[in-house]
Image (cartoon, rainbow, N blue to C red; front, side):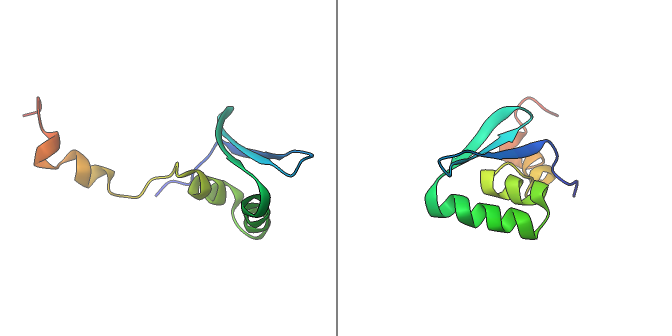
Length: 76
């Protein structure tokens, strides 16, 4: 599975953390969630952590979903 790329985060003066993906806002965290996020980013792979927190990462089932009969309309 490829590593996620293009994520960055910014901690603002009021404690809010804004996560961006390729320059577009992907999530905003405040309070305890922001603190927990910052601790997790500091201790692990930042790109993977940000992808997980925003929900913008691959689950590995894309090929299975593409081949499902429900998704075969128009393809033969």
